[in-house]
Length: 301
Image (cartoon, rainbow, N blue to C red; front, side, top):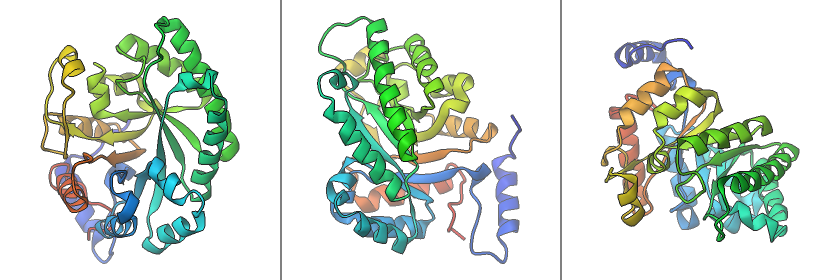
C-alpha cells in the first residue's frame, strides 16, 4: 500500500490547495460521520444542521430512525436534502439465533433494507446481540451465524445496500481465533466488518493487529473511547465506561495513524456516549478530530 504524508506536510498542502475555495479535503479521502442515536428522537433537524455546518460528510442512524420515520420516509428525505448531509448507515441490534424460531425477522430486515436504500443509505450494520441461551459449541454457533449472514446478505444484495457485521462482546466471538473464523465466513458472502475500537478491545482483539490481517475487510470504523482499560475478566464484572473522544484511555492516535499510513478509504464514524448532551457530544468530538487528529472536516475553511 502507498504511504501517506506526515500530518504536518498534509496540513501545509491542504491549506495551499484550499486557497480560493470554500472547501477543504479530508485526509486520503476518508469520510467522517457521527453516530447520532441518542439524540435523533427529538433533535434530528438541529443535529443534522449542525453536523453539516461543521463539515461532517454523513451520519449513522439507528433503530430510532426507522421507528420515527419508517412510515414517513418522504419527511426524512426532505430533512436530509434540506440540510445537505448523507445518511451513511443504519445500526441494527439482532440476535441471529432467533432466526431459527422467528422467520418474521427476515421480513422486518427486508423492510429496513428497503428503507435505508430509499433514503440513499449504503450500509446496514448488524450488531450481534446476546449469545444463545443454550450452551452450543463454537462450531454450531458459527454454522448458525453463517446461515443468518447468508440470508441477510441476500436481502441486502436485492435491496442495493451492503451488509456490515459489527462484532460485539455480547456475541460468540471471544478471542482472535474465533474472530478469524468469523471473517473467513462472511467475506465470501460479500459482507464486511465494522471495526468498533472499544468493542474490539473488550473482546481481546487489538484493532491494529486485526487490520494488519484484514484491512480490506474493514468498511466502517467506529472511533470511540473508554475510561478504563483492564483485563477482560474485570470487564465482565465492571464494563468500562464509554466516554468522549480523548477523555479515555484508548490510544486513538495510533489507530488513526495506522489508517492514515494505509490510506484507508472507508467511513470513520465518531461515537459519543449516550449520556453526553447534543452540544457537548458534537462540539468536543469535533474539537478532538480537528486538534488531535489534525483533520479538517469538509466545510471547515
